[in-house]
Length: 116
Image (cartoon, rainbow, N blue to C red):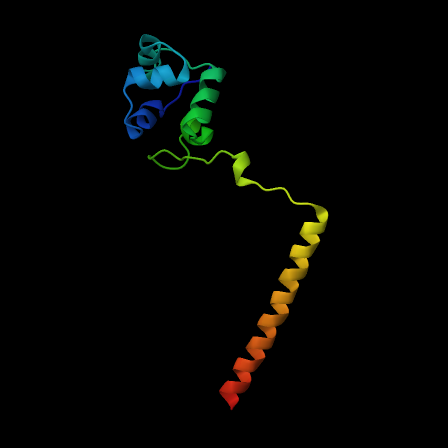
């Protein structure tokens, strides 16, 4: 069981009513009101839901780390990742090396023109 010292600050920052916030984390408004006022403890499941749903740092929420304003975290999104084959990766490395070589050549040309 956890006392959450910043749950009200989070709710207000998100412009949610007690009822809206309670519904999102799966508790009744009456239960949420009691918990927000410090009359009881949040379960580990409720804390996990708050962190997951609102993408807020558990350290900020539970321990108060990170200042007064909520510290939001971006959850990994499978669409943010791509998969490539080993051969594609090797080809990308080769292209990067060719680009580095080209950059060096251009830098030499610029230096020669400056000396000109």
